[in-house]
Length: 632
Image 1 (spheres, one colour):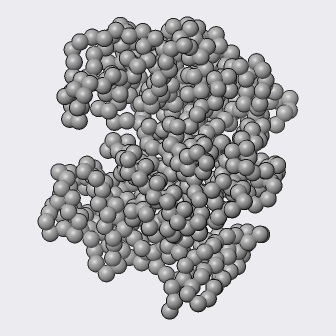
Image 2 (spheres, one colour):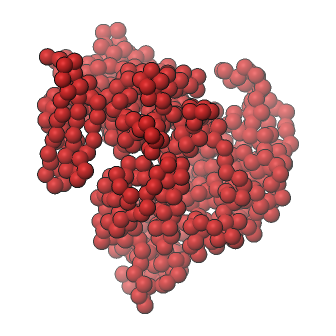
Image 3 (cartoon, helix red, strand yellow):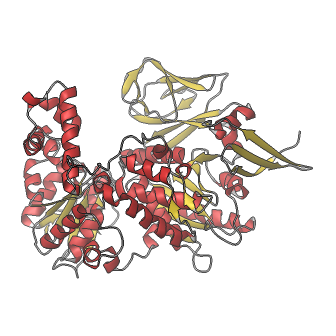
């Protein structure tokens, strides 16, 4: 039997078959898998391979991570005891905590009478099946099931993009829990180059550079994405340089964009954008490797949404709702009082904060930002307040915090709803006195800082449940700016999509000319939970993987391909429906409230809890919409 190496894998022109080509010592082979309409070609190819998946466990703990391969013949026991197959010295584990076995291609975990239990997705279990996307904990330690099937091995360990992003989300959750770092690398060539190289030419060589628990994903025909967890910036830099050297050795010059959690993004979508921007700045002539913080920001005028509004350039602010928002920003910017920006994830809260700063009297001063959800408590307080030498383990020298750095300017506290209660108390004092102490010091320091905070949480509800200080809420909520979700900007969605397509065309050297009707209908029917950021990511990837001049439904993320086209967030223009965007949003919101109240037997408290708002907010919205319980 000769060893075969995969040289390419691509869909046929009608996307009804997947063609694999492999080269051996003496021959070349081509395998074509025909599929029925609606059948996934990847699954059909897996069936044709006829080999079994390989399974392993990755156990995260305070000192690092342990990898253990699972066998179908022998069970694996994890615990603190010396007789365990995998010994982890964590006080939260029992001596023999849990047993893992493989039945077919399924992993089964069994609690061996441990003190702190085994949980899957938050539920205590005695014995249960567990998969790669389940949240498994032994005591307090997260455990991940890794699954590598034969097809992925033949493709150099490649994951499909959707699976890769799911693993990225899980890795970032563990990073937040343990205060660790992770790096996202986008590697490859420009989608349109004279020496275009399919990823299968270099994917196997890149896989050899990675550890077993690192992730390698298929972003586009010429680009790969790498998740390098449990890594420092120096280690990530070294890996990126090895990747570039490997490309040179293979005769395939590569580019690399790198972004690290939490410095360049606090979520998967933010890291994606940061890595994409860095990749677009990379150049063989100057620097083939670019880090996200090296990316040059556009000029202030380009980022200033208010100036775009007055100049009417581009589609970003065409809707009346978002125009009104930036008119409010223009009015409140000159004030010194704190501003609270509220909006869902991805609606542009940081852009709004930048606009507030540039139009304020502090525009010549510094603007510093911190994401309160990205860092564990001890690192967060050190970053904000600074620390003295010896204040805690690892504090080898005095470090100024963001309060001092932002003196004379603006401090932007993103996701302020994630602040722990002890940090909330310290922040309240600074807001009231403009004075604070570094960690490990009793000496007060005076500052002159304007505070802008942002959150996607319902702070009123958090105040009611004790998760957020009422006095801090009142102090932050002096002036409020509410950013609309993308589904409330439905009249702009098509224009926004074309804006991001044009942007991606320019950055990637592509020439996509349009979006077909089926794709647009799916986009209009999709709720866009990630808002503008999710739309930009979807359009950029669609541009680089599209096979023709038009983006089709197949080029969109899987989540958009399965939406119900009968559901749309664009209201039909008839006499019963308001023609203004604000009116449509109110009617849509009122319909949701009515439906929720009916389903819950007119229980207002239960409806408020389900909708994620306070009872007071629900009552106000019912009053505005004219909803009366007796009429339901």
